[in-house]
Amino acid sequence: MDKILLVLFVILIPAAFHVWRKKRKKALRERLFKREFPAEWEKLLNDNVALYRRLPRDLKRQLHGHISIFLSEKTFEGCSGQEINDEIKLTIASQACILLLNRKTDYYPGLMSILVYPDAYFVDEDYQIGGQILKGSAVNLGESWENGAVVLSWNRIRNESPDEKSEDSLVIHEFAHQLDAEDGFLNGLPELGKNSSNREWAGIFQREYEDLRMEAVNGEDDVIDGYGAENPAEFFAVASESFFLKSCEIRGMHPALYRELCGFYNLDPADWGQDAERVNCNSPA
Image (cartoon, rainbow, N blue to C red):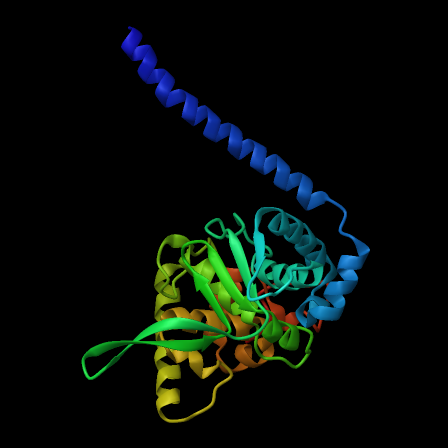
């Protein structure tokens, strides 16, 4: 009997502690989500993030709650002398959390730290020439690691995020990789919700990816950046950038892809500038 009680104790105590932690985390997130968003933070986002300015009012309110939770749970670290301030944290957090709008989310559960460099940075890299593996360095602007970190260049973000005409977002790109990797595989097939099916997603994305690769070989331009031809994971990240920043163009040129991204993100950014109160995926492609 004593052994049985001991076994039950060993099993039940950790399980009870896990349940308590989940409830505590949920309650804390609910409080943070409802917390008043400072007016100076809103002004900073209006000044620094063009995509924020396009958001309908209801999505802005939702985004404020997500940002509060994100800032509470994630650590920002400056690298190579970069100091971290509210401008940096809010500019990055807002764009990362736009990817979470209207979706059930656990706030990038595998992510612990955002590493911010002042500008481009060097990374060690292996490459192959004539069958030999050689070591060298490469210049990077951002990375997304599956072991808990995103690396970003602040200068790149500062230059592109306030620009209404910018077609690139380093933050959206790297955090799309984080979404992609949440199911354990960085392969361009993220964990889909109820609005998408794996079969349809795989078929459309494979076809669009192959088309982009052929365009890259032939030197043809597309609304989707040619970097997406590198591999399926990069295609998903680049397509996500286009979805948010070139939504009307991608809806017109790649309607099936746009519909899949609408279903995944549960948003229709092509409509944001046309009707600030209407956010759906029913507009004609």
